[in-house]
Image (tube, rainbow, N blue to C red):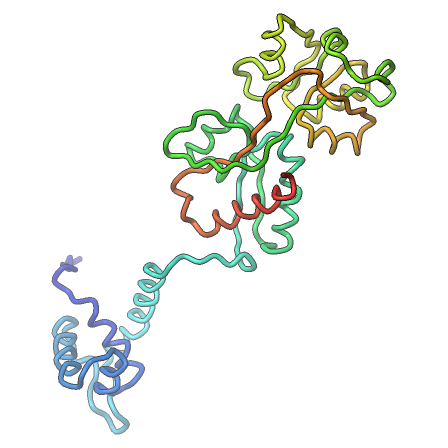
Length: 303
């Protein structure tokens, strides 16, 4: 197939051809493009040379397309429409949006945030689906490698290619089964250390904030059970004499559904700062920006 040198072709002349198809008049086509009649005639001459055909000829009712002109009318119109779509600003219409948004989040944030996010999808973007990815430690790798659109959690240092936006802060609370004896006066540090603990291990890297705080006091706790999910940990606690330390908002949510008693943590631990992260390649995407705003709106009532 003969290769065409596009650098030697004035693609703007195709706009004149499109106008000629619509107007069937060189003068009117020129006016549509802001050209004088002489400039339009010169442009038509260049267009005929470029395409190797007269394209339009005079007829009884004005200009008529030659067979090649007829054959090119549709493809040229589609080509110009595609070009306009390429250079037009990207827009996002939630009501007509389709596809899937994939978010990496452990069960803690899934329970607190994503149910309300899904409700917003159902209300504003009913054909857009939400997928929760299998967690992978702190989920940074999933975002880096393009496996997910967003990740929610607590993040330390991030690669330069990732953006971070804070969502909300929280503290830690303890839960025990609702009929657990001996907590009428609250939970002392001595009692806290003496109890058997359920610990939720998310990333599997480093000590938890609770264990670090205890170590500064020369104390340790007995972790009788480690699980990867807060919901599982809470269900074990509801059926045992063990204790679980977890984010306060989640503790309150679980206590509404499980027979659990809330107790203040008798230990000073730094606040938890939850955030969402995403890759720079999605930063300017209107659909992605819309989802990020929905998440911000969901957590706006948290603070």
